[in-house]
Length: 149
Image 1 (tube, rainbow, N blue to C red):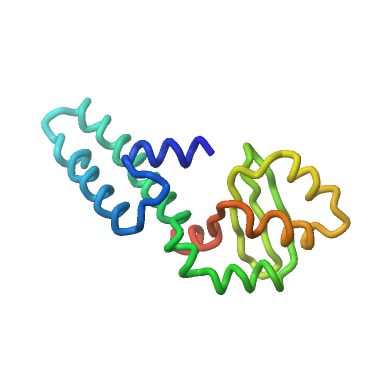
Image 2 (tube, rainbow, N blue to C red):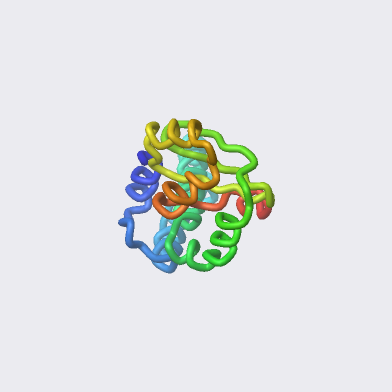
């Protein structure tokens, strides 16, 4: 997904970056681009504000898809995907957002349109998703982002 690649490029990390590395890189970039460093020049301050917002967004997104983050919530994720039915789903730009009956929401990245079409046409979307989506695509919890925001 282009968003993931762009965020990794912005922070200068690869897909194997661990949480500690992300945190270190994030702090370093924020020291460089913090708007308070540019009090003298309004134009530079405005640029720094936009850049820092992008850095913050990239950091939070990459933390949410990091393997360490997913491992911490693996039990909860497995429980949701195996026992809770699908309430609703939405597909946009190869991102499948699934809302479960227990209130959890997850985004799955780089899901091909053909897989989404098969999900729509499946006799049992829940069974299809368990077999072909839940453990096959990079995901992140969206419900936790909303709850902590």
